[in-house]
Amino acid sequence: MTKPDYGLDAPPVVRNLIVAGACCLVAGFVGFGLLAGIQPALAVGVLIAMLFSVLCFLVTVAAMAWSSRRGKLRLRERLVDSLGLQGSEVVLDVGCGRGLLLNYAAKKLSSGKAIGLDLWQTEDLSGNALEVTLSNARRENVVDKVEVRSGDMRKMPFPDESVDIVLSNIAVHNIVDQTGREQAIREISRVLRPGGRAVIADFRHVEEYASILKSLHWSSVEVSARNFLIFPPVRVLRGTKPGPRARADQGSGSETP
Figure 1 (cartoon, rainbow, N blue to C red):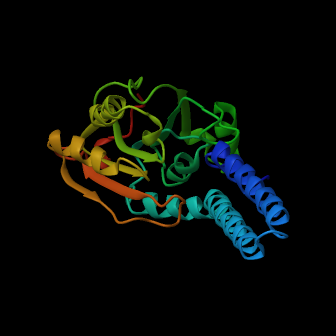
Figure 2 (spheres, rainbow, N blue to C red):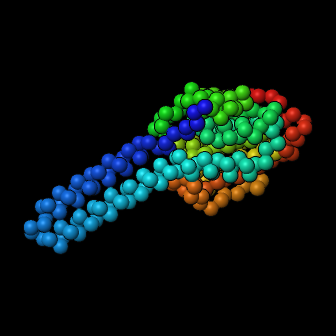
């Protein structure tokens, strides 16, 4: 069976970096040609500066490509494995994209369910589509444990206290306004059962998310140092919603919202 493909993150950014690098390369050689006969030292300086800029662009593109193809796969294992899932949980992946965390979490479940929610914006992830996510779930042999829905994280289509675990990877920052991000974090709190846990990885606004959860009296809210398995490097927020955690043998994952 074909391997799952979790796409290239931020494809417009990668494209713009390549274009900028090409423009710098052309500008460097043009500047060198114009100045070489007049001010040789300046011409060499311009060429070196432009070549250094091209190198910076190429290194950034390479880092983003490695992150998309290798790094984020390693990070997802660390995030999900750290939860110690018992198998009966309902796990919600907010901004699931092509199913990176969703499908790996589903592998850890027996009677539970992994649910993915996304708006499927291709500027955030190449080929981002509900059908692609389900295709990846089939390739990972977890499609029977996976449910995928279209929806906005600021107003999730799930009942109160209906999931055990919320995961999210480089998704919440895509909401450009602070009010919208706060709505999304409050929605995460709303849909989690008492004692439920959230793990949110992002490269911007993570302290902001933590502050919102603390204002909701969440316990054990922690923000990690930068993790360089993804580029740009992310920080990981972990927290627990107040209240007794449902026991797996009480069937906390027996109902799907």
